[in-house]
Image (cartoon, rainbow, N blue to C red):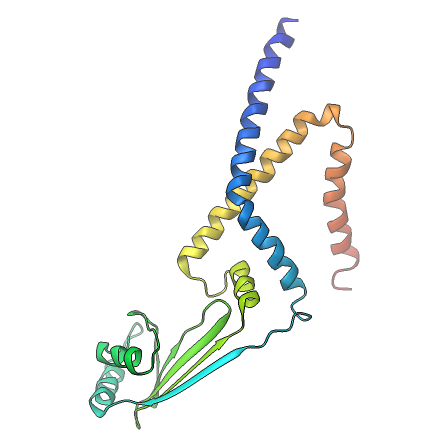
Length: 213
């Protein structure tokens, strides 16, 4: 009787603690889980969801002093070479193109090429080192593509990548505490482990028997 009376408070304590961690992790992950559930559907049916990309193109002409600055930058380029500040400022002012100070540049003998990938779209800037011609093109594939790229972490940057790691840890905490709560209630709920087993067996059978066949 004494052992039973000792175990009851311990069980109540751990059950309360698990419930607290379970609801906290579920609250933190709720919006993210909704986002990833919806984008899981849109990604799974990407071929059936029509999108109409919006393409914006612009052309310009660099003044000769800025062409010379570009040529000089190309001549002394290193792996982390960037556009000269006057050229970057001209592009932002005259071409209405936002360029970060650390925008990567791909140099060759004929041009400076600035790729600008982003979630839900793409863009690039090309500056001709001979003629000074400037070309810019931006493609926007819409909100669904944007959310899909957030799901995949495509071209999202360091901050979003860190968020995905934290979110994944939160989901693991949510799942593990849920499993432990199920274990503590399993004696009074006979269907607990058969249902958990189905959650493992069904996707395993689909993967083994149907996927890739």
